[in-house]
Image 1 (cartoon, rainbow, N blue to C red):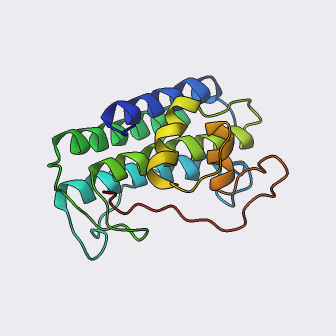
Image 2 (tube, rainbow, N blue to C red; image 1 turned 90 degrees about the horizontal axis):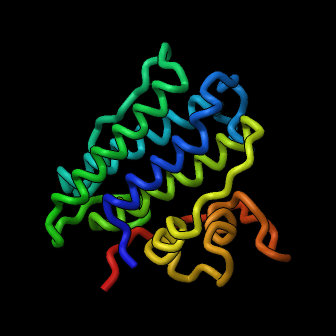
Length: 192
């Protein structure tokens, strides 16, 4: 299974579905167990998607480009969600137009376009889960989106429900009798 622009679009659409009815809630509360607010966590998602698109396009191999996306403080939660979707679209365009030989820096391993797509989907799913926790909503990342991310970024992940395994791999939940991880790291290096 590969992770493409389609999965990025599906992840941001799922985020909008999960959070769209909560745009009038208080987004200043912490996002789940994070120290960030729900609003700041959304800003982090947008910046990650933008940064990953920048990396795929520019292909630096030694560091991140010195640029980031900042959401204006006046942005409402609805505008924040729209900004995340736009940054996801940028990443999708970058991934779709990238050469198969394109490579770029990430601290977890030099990656290709598929790796950056998987990282983008992971950021959207995991941080949507964090925001949902802060807003006291009920939502679980879709298994079909989690499967590709696990295959690409966590090749040694244990068996189980893809959503449950992804949340365990990223330190957000227990998995069966296995405690929550207190530290974790994905492997974004190019495979094969």
